[in-house]
Amino acid sequence: MSSNGTDGICPIRPIIPSVKTRALALISSAVLFGMALWFGASAVAPQIAREWHLSEPQTAWLTLAVQLGFVAGTLISALLNLPDILSARHLMTACALAGAFANALLALFAHDAVTAIILRGITGICLAGVYPPGMKLIATWFREGRGVALGVLIGALTIGKASPYLIHAIGPKSWRLNVGIASLFAVISALMIAAFVREGPYALSNQPFDITQITRVFRNRGVRLANFGYFGHMWELYAMWTWAPVMIRASLAQRGEPPVLAEAASFVMIGCGAIGCVLAGIVADRAGRAIVAAAAMAISGACCFLVGFLYGGPPVLLLIVVAIWGASVVADSAQFSASVTEHGDPRYLGTALTIQTCIGFLITTFSIRLVPLLVEHITWRYAFAALGIGPLLGIMAMMRLRSVAPA
Image 1 (cartoon, rainbow, N blue to C red):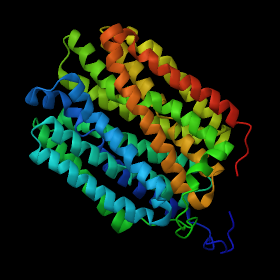
Image 2 (image 1 turned 180 degrees about the horizontal axis):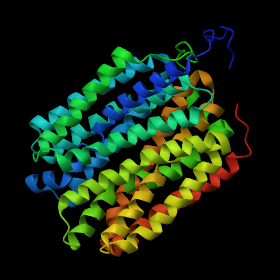
Image 3 (image 1 turned 90 degrees about the horizontal axis):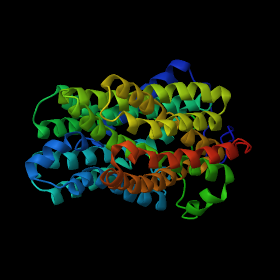
């Protein structure tokens, strides 16, 4: 990437470390608050299901609708190059506000599954304009230490997604109030982005529309392998985040433990991912992204095969394993994104990152739907083992990526 002011790139002046740290803190905090929308309804799904007399498949759609909405949103965004032809911060602000509004409608007015599922789908579409542009913004601030920076961002995202479980555990008993709090968080996110977030010195000017970027992403070997690793990672991640809390509730209920313990354990499990993301970023900037991502997938894949045997067993042992699983299952996520920013065309990083997330989240809809079917036929003891296929294939892609030099 040139730094002489040509090719649409502004001259780059030295960045004061405190300014970079402030930018990272602001962008990560905004993403944390915005992503509270993701599991806002999933965390209270048992209460919604009881109140509306929903079947298990209907209840699962409260989460699946967000995934599919996100896929639709990222597909539209990638086809139109929105993160590259528009200001990333303006896109994030508008989408966070729109997502807050859709989620608030659910909290205030929804009384049936169809309405709730439609609103959850719209929320997912809006979140497609929050997460990928946030990664692009981080790339405009960091070259050195990009793995750590993206690790912090995705760690914040992880805590944001876990926050509804904590709110449900310690907050009001009304599920509508808990869902409404997630909308309030998203409004805070939009205000933070609009008032305080700016693009960094490595930002390029807005690019012209170029639909061929969709196919160019897959002709770049480094980006292609990073994407294949990400796809294996995503096969596991969201199915785990969706169904492990359900398994924890059922397991602890068998032991006579209070429901609040299950909600707190779910928050800790997902929240541990923030620690994993930051630690993986620190190590990856030194040892290499591919090897760190492969190691994280090896640990999380092992947990896929182990955790089912702890169902109904001693709660302490189960919670230790799910905490390790929660830390490792998302630890590699930032490194796939960082690899795309390093191997891809710098003019269209937003499009490349959006395509990556679009296909990855489409994959999650299949694994999310698969787990309850497996539970029905082979029980919790073996159901999560099917998720281990993703990390195994991801490790293979990461081993090949080690030989590809960044662009």
